[in-house]
Image (cartoon, each protein chain N blue to C red):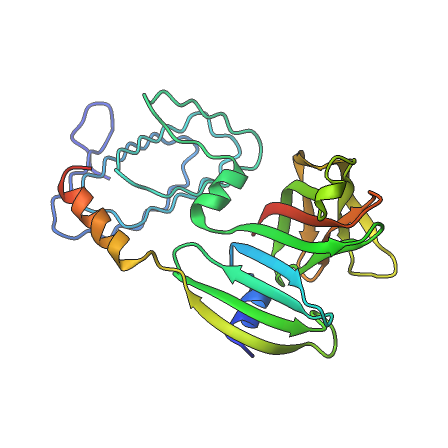
Length: 214
Length: 79
């Protein structure tokens, strides 16, 4: 290939309205600088299959962008922006509207009674639960100075009569717990969130389970 | 299939409340943010072989018109 540069490089400048340029580089060593300044850039797909990749700098100055990155190995991210929003998955789920909030409540629950709600996880998705809470209080004014002992749990009810307890809490008047790791249920599994009355009088009870489904 | 039940099976909701009925049925209330509708239905034998929706209603949950109007006015005034 002819070249007019003393170092053997071959600069290319393209000035056109529309460019479609498939590039297949199979050299052993490549330095490739790309500067795209189009008005709008709908999509950029970059697939790097090198054995080793020394350094990849990406500078995105768009006002809004969704960036999906799949990394096998270790990804080091250094954010030096003045402000940046980073969401943990539960927060992100709520932001994009895939969070799930379950609640079941009933009054008139006698001592030893159980109240529950059920949900069958959507096929092809996984339910992640990160919070369980419950409340229990006496129905009768005369009982309200007594302990209101309750027990709440999350169970996998799919294979009933075999019931797998996934999480449980107890307390006087209610309680709640956030899990440091989410409890997961695969699509088609049956979740039951339950609350039991362990006080010696009739109560109103409620149970909440929060999470998200992807 | 009633819309509410379809939403339950496709997971197309954010909140679900379940209340027991006196006859063993369950009243389910499903809502999804931004949809402006709540689906409330009574089911017999939920998730069972003989599951049946006995009652079904769609409730509008949009904010009252006077509040929407007031919010628009507030925006105009730099709120």
